[in-house]
Length: 275
Image (cartoon, rainbow, N blue to C red):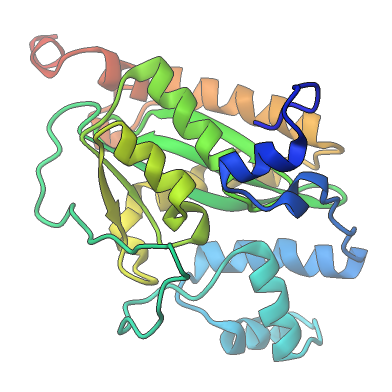
């Protein structure tokens, strides 16, 4: 989103986009190889046991022969952007300017494409280092409408993915996200409000509120990411792009009666039933 060749100074561009100026120049410090190995294992454990917090994860790692303290586990979890997922009372307050919106999908019938979109972020390990992946997912068809990779968890790459989905597919009635700062900031919610899109947010830590994206992460990681060892961000981007082409266009879904997300998204339901 930042254009370094533009006449407007980079500092002013960051102010207009409401993103940290430091993030424009930020180059992440490489994590030690030992930490990267633990983070890859934590990623798998988190998919398998999403309810596990730092205490349980430390115990699971210890059972595998990995000696690590609970504080270190918590630090790595924060760096990966993961936490134990379970329903708990809302005791936290949003950051200034970060409004938390109610969850709108409970009991809602999603009977057509573009009724509800969902977005989320996940950690993607590479051979050396890691990146973050965000997607825009259509709830009805499970189709990935847009996606982006980033070396940081700033909001900019989420906004880029959302803007691409809007440009290519029109606008949905509702967009559902979690309560991460990338999605509660005014830059992101302002994009939705400016397009007259209703904003829905999961309950704090309630992974079932966004279960379709959680299922997508499992598919992406077990069918693509864990089978690779990306040497660079560009390699990760190309390989994940090929996977999403397969996922959308060729991979049948049992929850869609065996059709692909592309078929479910582009073919009206009456025609599919007739076929």
